[in-house]
Amino acid sequence: MDDFTKRFVEARKNIVRSDFEKLNNKQREAVLATEGPLLILAGAGSGKTTVLINRIANLLKYGCASDSDRLPEGADEAMLQKLLQGGDEAKELAALDPVAPWRILAITFTNKAAGELKDRLERMLGEEAGDIWACTFHSACVRMLRRDAEKLGFPSNFTI
Image 1 (cartoon, one colour):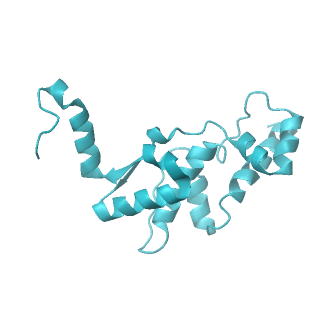
Image 2 (cartoon, rainbow, N blue to C red):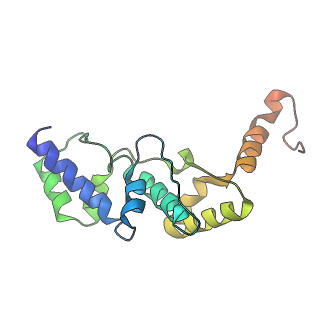
Image 3 (cartoon, rainbow, N blue to C red):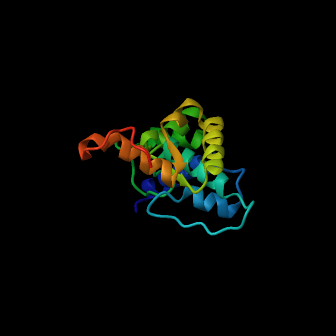
């Protein structure tokens, strides 16, 4: 990796990390891991839901910027200087392939947990959270089945 790429990637990662300073080191590590699957094993009250919500926020705002060494198209010294200066424009420039909210599925086991997840996502993300599927395994599957039930020869208002 050449010197410019190293400086650019480090500046971008610093911008992303700065949005998640309130998390502890292990939580931040999980939130910033955007490439591939992630398994979090932790006890009750350790912040797993906080990690999930912040990870979703990271994917929506920055995409893979915290994990990737790839430069965006048009990356130049002027863009690097804006990243180094910080601020709102730097946060926009730091994004690398942000994820659309409708591409996120956050699954929980209970209705109570799904409700809490939805509430916390709405508080953190605003109306953008409405496009995220945050639900139980069962409600996600029923939603998919109802959407395509008629193609399978069933009415969409079937009962389970």
